[in-house]
Image (cartoon, rainbow, N blue to C red; front, side, top):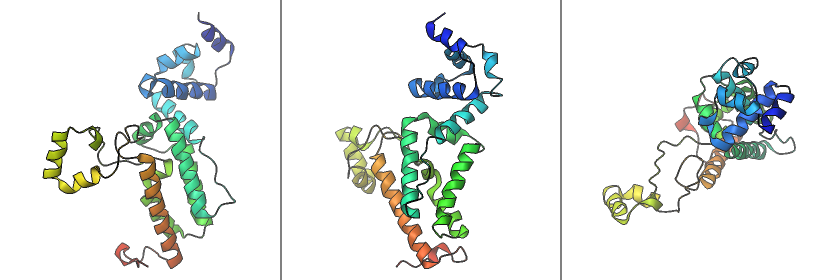
Length: 236
């Protein structure tokens, strides 16, 4: 028996310890490496021991998501609502960058976990505490979407970005789709982007978050409500 497994056997298994090891395993080797059998080997227990703490693999994944979301910084009560929301969302982004597998797991869930619901509830509370109406906050949450958890869901995730194109392919792209080519080659691309090879994802994320929060602040000052059509929001 390996020394690590012997130590694991001497340490009582509990849900938090099991989930922490599952998260660490996913960080080290990817979410595909996480199985009940592999996790039991890591913890030095028989597979059935895990089922005292989770009913199945789905419940294990839910618990892993909750453990990751719990790492996001709590709201800072000393900041104004806009700065507080921005700081917390960027904290969520740092957490998702530490655990890149978590995004895919979150997207695969059909129901939000308790920690996810708590995070969403406290994020809504930050807007409300800033004086935003529930009506406006409802639409803001839709607009932010996955950004409240620190990532964006890109329409296309094509690893063949502009920097990796051959000269001939780039020339053909420019001839066939001149406007796409102009935008695609306007900045260098980031192969380590959290959403896949593409633009500088951190810059794009913060740029879009800033635009959204600027717009929310403007609508809040104007007393906007959903009784107005979206196109009726005055641009001033």
